[in-house]
Length: 249
Image (tube, rainbow, N blue to C red; front, side, top):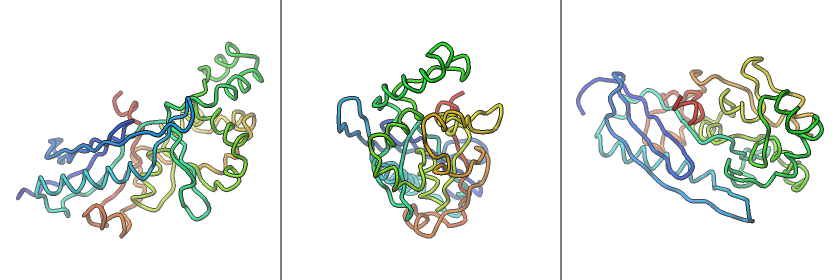
């Protein structure tokens, strides 16, 4: 391509694949690519994915798009992620992965969900207080499940990220939590604060969650390692992004 448009790379990191598009400043799709990945099922009702597969898909798609479009990488000014929601990705004090992503499909925490709701008077009262009842697939019950059933792992966890946060971390080295993703963790958009009562009940330390950002915030630019892997300039800005459901709304 010989035009001097600037471009943004958008990556939709869903439940089974990464779908990526190179979009011009005029809103035209110049190129696109898709990469797939699978699941693991350690126990009945458990559904996990290796977070590294998300990043590998982003790298593969970016490389394929650059090759197909023959675009000067310096014309790509930004990158953003739209991702599956409700992921639980644990990092230790050295920012190393402690395990796979516990995905939104995973329903291991039914017992914890019922227990949390019972403390507030049952499903109906809980729904009136919080807005919706919770199930074993929701994040707060699964955080309690980790603390109850994986106590050693829980103590090793320094930070928990969702899928979007993990990809922003791989791209920039910064650990943040975007508002739409934080909502599934108990962030109240109207109050612009966490539902701290849920964390007190669950026993989960809210300090294990990173700082909040908005979807339009610039989180940072590519690290040298990320830029080399992607074939892009370190000047590429990474935005807060959002969950895929909110992106489609």
